[in-house]
Length: 537
Ligand code: FE
Ligand code: CA
Image (cartoon, rainbow, N blue to C red; front, side):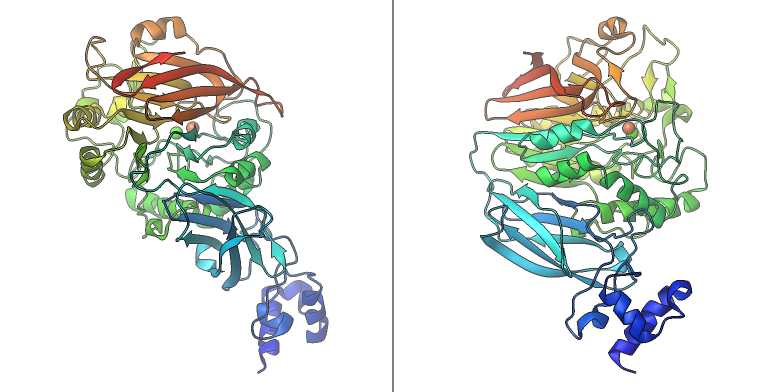
């Protein structure tokens, strides 16, 4: 059987109803004209080293880069000519070429190469480029067949120990597609960040019109997501949002997940519905695989069944040492059945963990040997106490946050003190509220030692338009004197680190239920190196 004959048979087998009545010659003509099939067999179109021919544009999900190293970066894309329908690629390896250049016209290409988009990974590609120059901006793009992707901009980290004047990074998360426009991500893309830290809830798993009862501006595609194809389609729907695509094109992302990448408020092997662990882990495996496929992560994060290595460490010269944490995969189930409680003794049990033993040991070692000016902990749920004593005396603390894992928090804060890790800054999201908070050795005692500062980004859209202040804020600020800033609109945090200070600007949009709202800075906090605590400027 000739190669052409074999290839045509493959296409016929894939499209029996529409094409089975055509002759092989007619079929080859259709394929050659980029007709009925989303992609033709590479061998059909022009022999041995032929390029694939796409019926529909394959780079619908844009491009991304991530996890910068001093000489390396991850470049990402996924071929998906039919993005909401599993991707629309044939079940075979497809060659993808990549280029990285000094300029956006690609006149000075510094490296190029070829990789395979494989069906096992939903035809995603993760190129780990090495041999680049530290602290340098680059442009990159992909090609498959005669199709060319959008161009992304990225940047490597500074050389180890290099003295640098300043780094700028954004902190964002919680983008529920249905409840708003990702306008804030468009504004974020217009800034010039060295990296963008994502605190999780990149997608929401709910069915169309599912989840909480909020105003909706658009609709999820399909039912609640369970299979790897479901999760792929959901990431695809989100990635087709132009503002999210712009954000990825603007700078490298450093991502971690929270709960909604799998299921609301899941904890380790437990979902919120009491599904048997061995069944929930099947769903978790599907969700983790699609997460890996959809993010600019290194091969070290390729999942193994329901397990995935997401916690990792990155360094930015002498300025920043970043530990990226995973507070979902290894945590104990929420205490007292989740929700918010007062006096839940279980929440304080020393045996409970939000990081798991191995990650905690790893983090505690990082804290002992970091030498950078700023010790960053990039993670999901707030570590600082949010006490609703005056507003909800029977439900003071949310069990899904570090408030429900107080022994873990105490171990972390004690470790920060004992190691004297320089200038700890915790990043978090999840609660759909901008917060700046001082981290206290004992939150019940405002006079206790300040061990660090936390910046919490509000959501990109989740909870809708919002308002200037949180309901009951007058009372909350009395009960939580450690909170130095709060804002209840949607947005992100823009941070500037220098050897002397860390500045957090809380960016907010007034509306997400209408497009194109302008961005403004609703508050700014400064932390001075060597002086624990944050103050408004
Ligand atoms: Fe969220
Ligand atoms: Ca969350």
